Length: 392
Image (cartoon, rainbow, N blue to C red; front, side, top):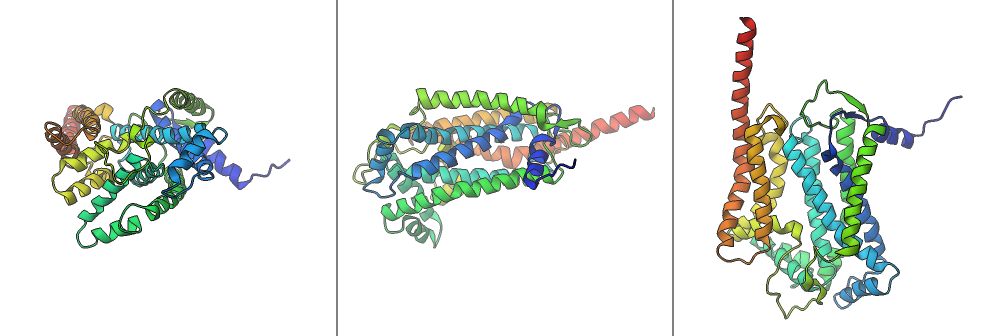
């Protein structure tokens, strides 16, 4: 008896069952699946929140409190959505750091990596828009400060700010625009995520592995071997996620955002959410306003240049001892920038931030290609010695 194969069933089978997977990948390859899980959670909880949220400056804060107090399980939906943003960025950063360590940006996965950087930028923009919606003190003043940075753009800067605001100040038109964009962008991110996955699966590139070997690597079907590994990672992550939602729902938020927005009272220290702090520190470390904005955006966008900047013939850091040392210095430097982003603009935090910002760019623009050339020369020398030895 002939069994009809539906197109959807074929697609699911191709990507979730028979997909050839390197036999030696570790739990560090779970973060892509976890990022997809976080995106689904954010979209679903966002839709339910939008049913009760009112995008008006006089009603937004009260509507959030209404969700928390009066809507059935509204507190759970809101806390899941708020903490889901933090969980999303934890997974994204770990996913990027894993890619940097194992050389996932190198050819033939350059296009997959570039798609990932674009998704990361859009996710940051979406998170910023969402941070404004509760219309608390930090929401209002964060929107005011961040959007004002666009005035540094020559000639058109003020026009861009007025367009973002929908007027001459952060007001009702601003809130409506941010709400509309915040609702729309997750679906754009979802479409790009599917494209990110299709480029990886359909182009014959496939998932990488810790050894950095492309051709001749042993592969097995995704199911059942890696289904169980991803399931374990999912359950561990979901446990941590639930623990934060039920026991520490406000740990990663700012207390000032539980105060209604007041344009007449400026908070003592305006800071963004924790996942923006490293890039906020880069912005503040540069005295010139325009250069600071360019550095902040460039610090993320330049990750897309890594396929071009990388010159090493070796993909994985497991076999790159020099790069590995500088990689861990880069990770430590990233955490230092995150710490500095929450500190006031004063000595010695400014000076430390400038040094940390300099190292961030030196690593990506100078050390990555320089270490690659050094390793290439060492590799060619080793290869020549091996050939001489074999010819004797």
